[in-house]
Each structure stands twice: as C-alpha cells, then as structure tokens.
Image (cartoon, rainbow, N blue to C red):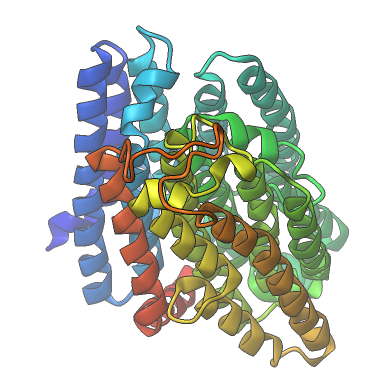
Length: 503
C-alpha cells in the first residue's frame, strides 16, 4: 500500500508528459492520449482516496532529496484525493461531451494544440490540489491561466480573441496580487512550504509582531484569488469567456478552472495563515458581502440575457457568490457548504453547457430564446439533461443544488449576525434563478413536437440527435447530480473529515 502514496506525483507528471507528447502527434492521436491520461488519473485518484481513507491522516510526499524548509512537497488527505478524483471525472465527461465539436470549431492542424492545453490544465489543477508549497502553487496558477487563455482563443474568431485578452488582463492582475502576497509572506516568515510557514505565522500572531503586514498579506491573497475565480465585481471576463469558447472549453472553464483557485485559497487559509487568524482579520466579512452581492447581481444580469450561453455564464457569477458567501460565514459548516457547492457547480455547469450545445444543434445553431423553441423535443436527451441542470441550480429536491442551499441555510444558523442576510440572499437568489432557468426550460418545450420555429414549418420528429459521446456525457452528469443529491451525506462527511485534515 505504501506505493500508492506516489500516485499524486505520478498524476501530475503524467498529465504534463502527455501534453509534451500530444504536441508532436496528430489531433486524433492527441485526443486519444488525453482521454487515456484523464482516465488513468481518475483511476489513480480513486486509489489515492482509498489510501488516504485507510491512513486516516494527511500524507506528506517529499519531492527530491531535500527536506523542509528547502525541498518541495506534496501533501494529501481525504479531501485532496476526492477533489482530484472528482475533477478527473468532470474533465473526462467535458472532453467527451464536446468531442465532435472540437473537430468543427478548431482550425485544421491545431486540434492537437487544444488537447495539449487540456493536458496542461489537468496538471495545473492537480498541482493546486496537492501542492504543499506556495511558490509551486503560484507556478501552476500561471500554467492554468495560460492554458485557459489558449482554450478560449483556439476557435480563432473575434469574440474568442477579445475574450482571451480580457481574461488574460484580469488574470494577470489577480496573479500579480497573489504573487505579491506570497512574497510578503516569505519575507515575514522565511518559508514557502505551507507547514513551516504556518508555524511562523502562529509565532507572529502570538508575539503581536507584523500584524499589519499579515493583514495586507491576507487581503492581497484573497483579492488575487477572488479576481481569478470571477467573484463579483471582478466578473467582467466571464460572459465572453464562457459564452464564446468551444463546448469542451466552456464546460472546463466554468466547472473546473475557477474551482482550482478557490481550493488553493482555502488551503492557504487553513494550512498557512490559520483559519482563526483569517477570521480575526475580518477579511471574511468582505468576502461574505461580495458573495451575497454576487448571488443577486449575477442572477439579475442572467435574467436580462437573451442568449442562452450568456445566461448560463452569468449564472456562474451568482454561483461563485454562493461559494464565497459560505467561506465568509467563517464556520466549519459554512466551509463544508462552500466546498459541497463547489462540487455541485462543477457538475451542473458542465452539464448545462454540454446539453445546451445539443439544443443548438437542432435549432439551426441559434442560441437565443425564441430560436430554441421545441428544441427539447428535437433532442430529447439534451432537453432532459438541460432541464435537470436548470432544476438543480434552482434547488429542486433530490438534486445537488437543493442540498447546497440547505447546507448554506443551516450553516447560517450558527452565525446570528449573518443569518438574516444569508437566508434573505438565498431566497432572493432562488427566486431569480427560477425566473431565468425555468423560462428557458419552458421555452425548449414550448410548441408542438417537430415544429421548426425558424421557418414556421413542421419537420420530422427526433432529427439530428447528438453524437453518442455527447449523450453519454450528459447522462453521466445527470447521474452525478443525482448522486450528490441522493447520497449527499456520504460526500458531506468526506468533506468534513477532509477539512479537519487540511490544517
């Protein structure tokens, strides 16, 4: 069993090595290599989770021959292994869901580059989950940013290039603030490894020295990660980015990229700064306030959209707000709710983007509300999948979104001075979610089966079904959503145990 402790390192290196090989082969071969790599990471992450559960404690893996404080480390417990497994599942289904469109949307001869970017994205996400070193975390934050930029502009159209530039500018601001924060942290602690840095921070707090610099460090790191994950009002890059990328890129960007930054931020709060120190700094109050504002404003902007893709993208702004609101509660229950909603959002947003593509395919490529009339009849699998995703976001019972909102509501009861604001925000946001998501669901099932809205004529029912890979990905994501909704207790207990080991 001791061999299994090497698997997190193998996962990261396999993803990076696959990217190198994919750059030198054809698009078809690169696609197969990427699918094989993600599947292998999925299997190894499952074995890592088994090892972590049996160990019952965090495991530190030394990279190289130099111990702390000079060496580089990977550290994993139950939560890290589960997140790696979950991310691999979402990545695999996102690639499968957009399989057929990658060939159409990407310029001939550049298909392999697209899969190189996916490989780099996978390696960076795994590194942010597993790393126990702040500078390594920063390096892979930048790799993640570059890979995301390439995925946005791979279609080589005007919208994609503008969206990539906007994303790059905002991401560089966030990365710069994060780098300044960890540089100051190194200056006052003398460490980049998380555990020695935490010990130094504890001593600083006990001695009452460097209190102001420590507050500045917490603010810089928090704001940097908030910008990169798209927290309102730093969300301006999201609608263009998610709305005009390829289906696979939209699914990955919305469901995984921002989550990697949030996970790294949570790790720093627990493992480096210390959650009690973060609470005493009152920075969480600001994150709570911006999270609540995002929940409302993201939904308001989504209601105003007539393009389905942009509506889903603005919905992500609101859902990121949920996560930061949970973190901002400053309790373990709030953090459990935030991490669970992170999982909910990852599965549901990937489902919505992939199923929406199936609806566009049978609607002459139209993405506006009227253009999608009856699309649920013309592509039954995509219609069902989109409806499940929409109902989950609204908070329909038995689906993951319902559990998320229940967890946020119960977590709010532990913070009386934030309880009313949290409950009011949940109610208002849920009503707004229902307005724009149910409006779209009603639209795709409006009219008579087989009606072609664009021409006013009737066409044969059940035309142009999605490819098998799209249907498989959609159904698998629906089942994942149901699993999170029906067997949430298993996941919640795992998250709770994992957070205990995070520190």
